[in-house]
Length: 507
Image 1 (cartoon, rainbow, N blue to C red):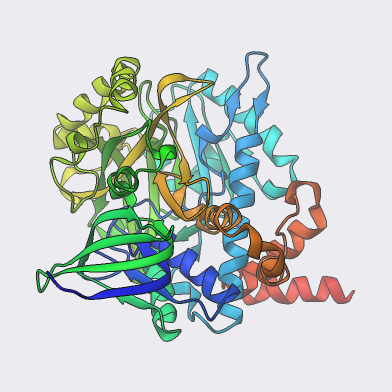
Image 2: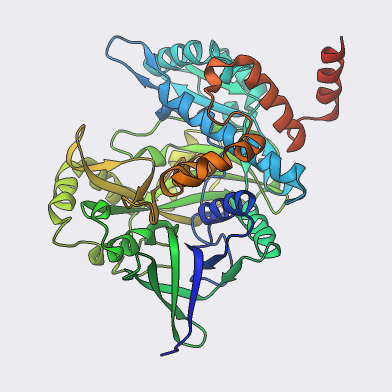
């Protein structure tokens, strides 16, 4: 064992988009802060943040039907859609600040403009989509959304999907051009590059094996250098566990009571990737459909144009899979090792409650390529098997916990922060909308864990994120200003639009 022991202000565990965002915020707010990062793999952004391990949707609730529910009286609840959209606007403002401050360059490497669409079939679904459109389009956050149930108009929007379609049942779509495709892997790598330039020590091939409270109230980490095999000890006043699905194990090891009645349910994803450039060229949008009965929200089928390594790709999925691993590079014992005496009842209750989900996952795992092609043909009627390959995406671990609303063993869909009462340690758990809301979620971590400094930091936060502390939905003028400035900074509008905006302002 090495006697090496270091002390830092902050330790970030995991080199994904969440640690990258928190590290960047802290370095902007407190440049003198000493920050260390430990990552098990040999580079940053290789697990959930990697461009091949997520859908790359800039989640703004522009196309995801599961963010809008139909209430018993037939009206549409858009409160979650508003929240997710406002969170994405916060991310866009922060990224714009980083570009304007020259901390990151070439935003087109990580974000591209792309229409977001919702597509449904059948009378009932068409009626729901129309009501959803009416509820959203009257809201300034969703300005510019269009609706059509005219096959000719849809042919113009989505030719690949409408070609050779047997038009027996009603079909409708909404489209909004202000959507984005985000390469979270490229963004993560850019953020870590500038953190290293600012003196942040990033240690790759270092696995955090244990997290324990020291007698002085700080945290002591046992870290294994995977290259030398040596064990090291590192201390910090504040620890952030941002290790994707692997966060649960370290949260449990920390022993904080807030982490006790929590479990995790791993779901893996598979995408089909088109390898025929002629087919890829015929589609330009992210088109989201409706989830099948029993499917988790993260398994909503969608056909996506993607920009990966500045090359246009076409992906369809995700198909859900099951493996007991909590990370793509994890262990098959991850799930069993996460079951403790204090969360056993929570886990068992979740299993009993979620039989339809379990059945759905088993069915998905057993699908042949031809069965997957049948699902794809619901989107692209004339899809050919030889044009498509299967790729394994990242692992997601859905949080299981006891809640007042859902009772014991409730499966949570979303992103969740668990922190100790004194704010000295925090862990990020959960899945989608995840990376899209990273800036909002990390501001929540700062509020919980650095309450004494937040007053001092507030002016700088408002400088970086003009909407901070304000409700965008109540401020249409601010929405317009933010949409215009972030689109311009991040290169999401063409020069003609910028000139038109400038001329209309001058007029």
